[in-house]
Length: 137
Length: 289
Image 1 (cartoon, rainbow over the protein chains, first blue to last red):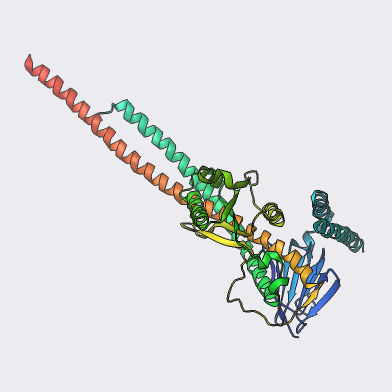
Image 2 (image 1 turned 90 degrees about the vertical axis):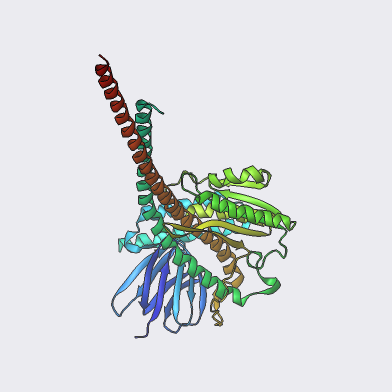
């Protein structure tokens, strides 16, 4: 199977670096699956799950709170604002994220910034809903 | 000739100092390990960010470019962001960063430009305010934070960005100390606004698709890049500080050891001299009888 180099980096550390078969990326305009040979894309991410397939059967899931994905001919790089292994995520973590976003939204004065933070807040709440459903299932 | 009691006191006080410097060295060594791994972990992100930005920036240029990358078209007002430590006793660490900033400021002033300062860390402020008290806009105190993180960098970056949006300056330069090794920290100046695009990065000529618009991406990416560069600076700085403190305290401990040795020798010698003197007195007293 054709593979490409995938890297998931957060400001604190590198979470994943290696070959991948496919990566599902939560772009702001919808989830997209990247396979080898994907057209070059730069996409802004929303809070969501990044699913990396390293082989036919094994995959890894990460939670990202936003960031940027760069896809070029040979590699995919995700620069996440914050990223964790999905196993390490629970409701408390998400609540904390929502709380930070809320305080920042309340404290922001710039109109464009406010809009961006508002969008992020909505996306976070949305994701929390999805996350809870997932856990229930 | 100091009395024996004086010498004893002096030795005791040097010993106490040595204990303190030794403890500080060990604390710095423990902190260094953590600060170093944090600084090293932050490097890949900043590097990737630079590459992505370079790729993006190669696609846009000219008048349409955002100000954060293209500049304001002037370099009259210069902002120097000086990152130093909150505490002293770390050798030449603080003063070498401050000196670099001061030299740059004086050179810029000689060219007839306006210089403004933002100080991150109290020590740099203490040094710079002697000469530039009127030019210092803000002092950011990070003392309350044990482990510096993304949030701290964001506060600093937000403050810089707000000033840039208000048109308070045209060019910003970040001063910090790059951590090379425990004994070597390099004071560095890095231009952050307009963003420095590393030359020689292989520019992927691939035409990217953008999701959402290109301009929108750059709008979020450029401020974040600034945050990341600031984050890298403060983390490198934290590691450098501990490294500098460790080697400063190491040599202080060694100096104290040498001093103790010398003083003890002096003490023993004068003690023996006193005994000899007393013996001579007794003997000559006995002979006189």
